Image 1 (cartoon, rainbow, N blue to C red):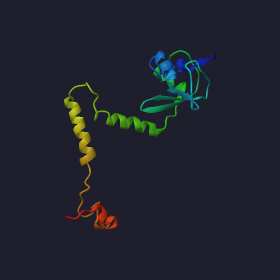
Image 2 (cartoon, one colour):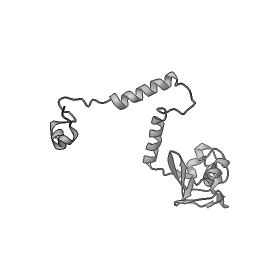
Image 3 (cartoon, one colour):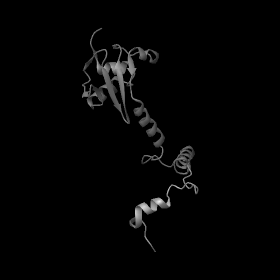
Length: 155
């Protein structure tokens, strides 16, 4: 097969929705091979490991085959192998969960659904555990003795 540009390949395997988006990502330094930023015209080969930074995570793909025309989603696994680490997907999940807590300026008042989600999230985060167990307290007298009087003020 003839040489394939990285921007065209990233578009063809559906990493980016448009070729111009793939080109722009390369120009912005969000696409790397072996830790080196690549230009949109960089020629790729089978076996290359390509990292694509799409905040908040960095996807990593291994090139299995070359192509220059866009293929259907079902055929994509024939051309690339997703080797993104699980910790990157955890970052994505954390961003998804935490995304609704801070609203962007100008979006207006939260909807009822947003309010329910925020309430559910804050209740689980702050009230979902019982650390006020009198039988097994988190703060004991031994802890207080270890710290001494430097953290304890007497009336």
